[in-house]
Image (tube, rainbow, N blue to C red; front, side, top):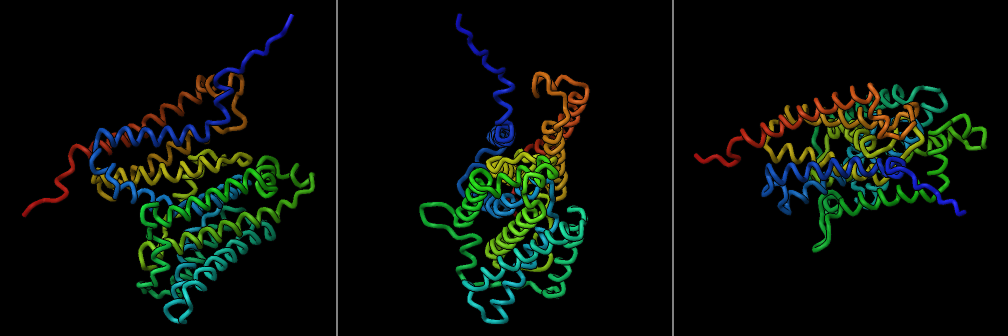
Length: 372
């Protein structure tokens, strides 16, 4: 008598795809809401182009941050690295007459050097990632303030502005091509190279990874070097986008990027990464912020709404990805637990607050072009 294998339950089959299903579902929810609230303004070509340009700025950093978080690290200095790299590049071009073709690679190399410093502080001096990168964030920002002295450096060559906001006619914006290329590179590194495999192994169990012969500290440094270089690339793109740079630029890059990576399915506990999820997470946050602007919600309420979404998303994802949750029946069965019910109520309350803010903007906003 032939024995037939029982197919696994739906929850088990969906488990590997949760990382990409969740952010895509959130993107779909934003599309549906804006199709009802502001379809004309939100879905016009110029606005969709703005969303892509905004997302492209964060893609390089999200790619690198995926590796850092996967190996149980964090980098809070990326905003300062982006600003300082942009300022150093601007000085090379404006004051020392360097060609933009030379200044841009130098800026990225300087960003990699700052990432190397971060990695060495963490691995050689045993400073926790959170404290070490937060301290270096202050150092890099301080250097930027000292160098710029309150000046706004502006008006750069066309090559630089093309990197930040140029467009290939009939194709896509150049920054989107750059950002997408970095995400593709990150996917290849994660899935097809020893660097990616070692990163996941280190995040899963650093002690076991070291016993198998992996140079754990060295690979941690590699990830921070990559993060610094990508932050510098983002600083170059930001400078080109604004055609200007100052010491206070990129103040919230770290929060935005970390939130996008975690929302995209990379585990804060390490050992689990999704490059496609990080891509979707960046796109989703850019869509959300653009939706708040489109609904004409005041800037301060935009900050409140952004924080609500980030907290609810990260909290829910952290619960989903907890390695010590009861696994009987998979994540669908786990949703029935008392802790899960509390998490769902908490998330529902936060999302309800966001919906109220969006409704306020859509229903009570004044005429954007008042006459008289």
